[in-house]
Each structure stands twice: as C-alpha cells, then as structure tokens.
Length: 331
Image 1 (cartoon, rainbow, N blue to C red):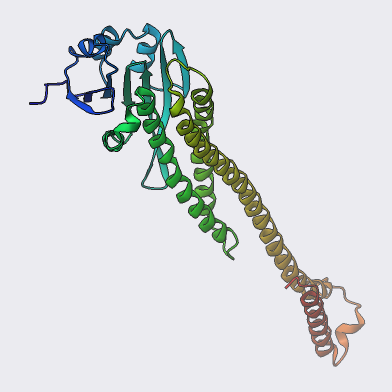
Image 2 (cartoon, rainbow, N blue to C red):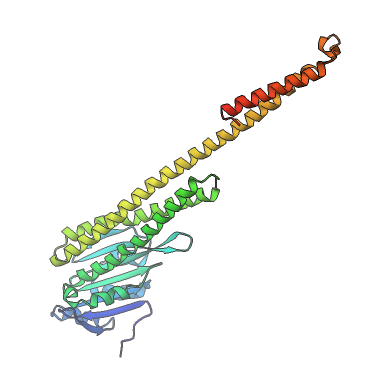
C-alpha cells in the first residue's frame, strides 16, 4: 500500500545503491533512508508546495534557509548556488501554447549526495515520464542523484527544441507575407510578438548554459564523474537552442527592417502616381484658367476656330504628358 502524501507531493521514492526502486516512502521516513549508510538515495518531486511542506523538507534534508526561501517564492532567475554540501539549481521551463506564445514555468532542484528534490512552479510538464525513463536504466540511476538531476535538466532543454522548430516555421511563413504585394498590419504585429517570445526564451536558455557548464566541471563531491558527459550533451543542446534563438532574432530584426523599407517604397510609388495624375489635371486647368481671366482684348477669343484649337492644344499637352509619365514609370 502506497504511503499517504500531501497533494503537492507528486513522488517521494527511495532507490538502492544499484539504482533499483525500493518504493514510495513517507516524508517522515526520508531521514531513516538517509541514516542508512548503504548507498541509497531519495528523489522527491513537488508541485507548488506550501511553506509548511518546505520547512518539513528542510528539516529532513538540512537545506539552507536562503534556498528554501527562493523555492517558496517563484520568479527566480536561472542560477546555481552552492550551500554547504548541497546545490540549489533554478531552471526555467517552457511550453508552447495557443497563439504561438510560450508559457514559462520554473523548476527548482536541491541536489545532495543522497537526495534530489525537484520543485515545480507554474506551467510545467510532470517529471513522471522522466522518472520512469530513468528507472528503466537502473545501471545509470545507480550513479546517484546527479544522474536524476541530469534527466530533469535534459527534459527541460528538450522541451525547448520543438518550440524553436515551431518558431522557425512561423518565421518562414511571416517572411513570405512580408514580400507579398499587399501590406498586412497583422504580419507586423505577429513579427513583433515572435521577437518578444524569442527574447524571453533566450533569457531562459542563456543562463542555463552557465549552470550546465558548472555541472560538467565543478562540484565533484556532488556530481558523479560518469554523469559529466551527460551534462555536456545537455549543454550542447542548450548551446544549439541559444544559437538558433539568436539567429532567428537577427532574422526577425532584418525582416522588420525589410518590411519597413517595402512600406516606404510602396508609399513612394503611390505618391509618384498621385503626382502624375495631378500633373495631368494641372495642365488643362492651367490653360483653361488662363482664358478665364475676363480680359476684353484677347485675340484668341474672337477667332473662328479658337475653341477647337484650344481643345486640340489641351488634348495634345495631356497626351504628351501622359506618354512621358508612362515612360518614366510614374503612371
């Protein structure tokens, strides 16, 4: 029979030195597992725990006050902090939602020699599939809590990849709209929204590179040497996501500039056409207004064919001007 756990405790499992699952345990039994010097360790998964539960875990694992305070209050920046014989890691999770937007959450992890505690805040997928994957490879899980931390961070980074691919496809579609004949204000707004989301994604990914770099080189008493290559692999994925994000942000900036230039050129063409038609109207207006001055002694007024001659002159001027404007592509 599984032990009764608070609702915000997703899992509380003990593993033996060979990576085998010993079973679910209660929070009070954590200290019993840690007191047994047999190489076992505990993996606890929480989702938005309250202050009382975090204080309980602090008592069981001997966690630092500052780390507990950060874990209780979300909206932390991605970081890694060393507190005595434990590490406190903060990573931002990301999920694509409707409308091409990203919902960000946080995962806080406490890593000790014989325990891993993960605390999720906000939008975030459950780590149950991640835990199941790790349990199917007991030989690797036998490496200890640092391997469990690896599979968690690997899942976080892997969730970035489909978002990057989706944004890349969206950017390609928006570029085609930018080069379309008609200006669409919604395209510009979508470009701006996409750039904002990419900036937020970069703020989540860029600090994670420093976290992973430290886990590949430092903290030898907490990170098993055989786990470091796995962290390097996650770091490589994070670098790829960061580079792709930077590239798309540059392309978005260029696309916005091209869109502005095309709009300016289109407006210039419209102004040229309006000026051309205005010139066609100005020519007959100037000629006819000349004869509307009501002077009495104008020789042309009394000629027999003056009216028809004037019509012919006006028509010739308009036709000639029209032909010239067409030649210079103003019409």
